[in-house]
Image 1 (cartoon, rainbow, N blue to C red):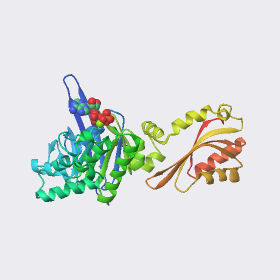
Image 2: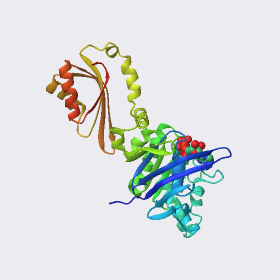
Image 3: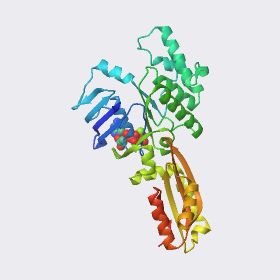
Length: 354
Ligand SMILES: Nc1ncnc2c1ncn2[C@@H]1O[C@H](COP(=O)(O)OP(=O)(O)OP(=O)(O)O)[C@@H](O)[C@H]1O
Ligand SMILES: [Mg+2]
């Protein structure tokens, strides 16, 4: 059995302001395994940043237990490490942010080197390390540039190189692509994936975009009002979301929302024939669109007119969605619905068949 590299148990974070108290995180537990790319999604104010700042005690919780890589950091209301122990631990946890947080008066190279200020290395070793890090993030040729001379994507690469300077086991990314365009976002996510694969880096990825989770994470937690409302493998969550909020995040990620708007505008759907129903089918694994359509006709005599189809590869498993019109007698349609359900195809009737 693998042991979680990050173990937060029953974490509370309460902020006291003049007139009110804010419970930013409420009795929240989260376990992240080594090598995971773990997505945390939620709307603004859900408590995502507060929760991950607890991991390296940038935010000291009000209550709960924190264990990172086998070491107990916080328990019974107290930090369990010495100041030096905590400093060392923090070096094992790299962080990157939306606004990069680079020093504007320093070059890319100097920004990265700054993270090695206290490292136990010779000057030459440090120089070699910084060069290797800049190469790793694909920025060696811009090493002498200042942040103002770099694009957003390049600045984030500098920040990633800096975050990796002390060979962390964990990299926390708090909305690190929110300020970037879609193409640059993909490039940065690709880099995080590469680091996860090549260095075995555990990545904790905070975002409000399920698309990003879908692209690179293997597990995901959904946060609302300071609590985790759903947690699981990306495949499970996408193929079988239990919570309405999770469903909301997913529909925006798969594009099905937009597709449905267009589908409902089509004449064939507006004037749906008596013998027809509009359905949404969802399946994962070996089943394919063609197999479904063929089977419906062969086994049940039901014809299918596919209006929308989408297949995603989630953590190596294909997950498909179809929206289409099924036509047949009421008995045939009923048999087809049961047949699909038996074949593990989730079916939802969107219109018709009353
Ligand atoms: N230092 C603080 N003092 C007081 N309240 C705080 C502090 N930090 C966060 N909060 C409050 O805690 C709640 C959670 O904030 P947090 O920043 O963790 O949310 P988030 O999910 O990261 O949101 P976003 O997506 O906007 O970054 C919010 O209501 C916020 O106003
Ligand atoms: Mg935040």
